[in-house]
Length: 75
Image (cartoon, rainbow, N blue to C red):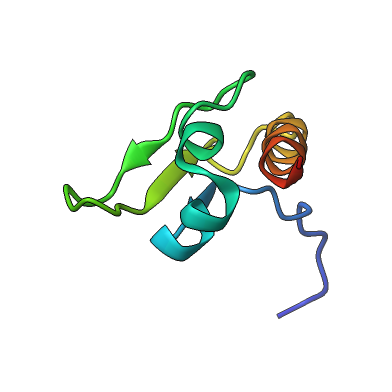
């Protein structure tokens, strides 16, 4: 295959397991102020959370990813 340019990778989602949610705090992990709204992946008492960020084509997904990770890391 001849060389060709590839688009840079763009994040499509972030998923946190229950251990990460426990260390971050359920309230903080479940309610990011600037979106995206997470989806619970299980109906257990300690579910995982899945944050959709886009379809891999919008570079603004990087900004959403950075805002989300900054929110989740705040102490």
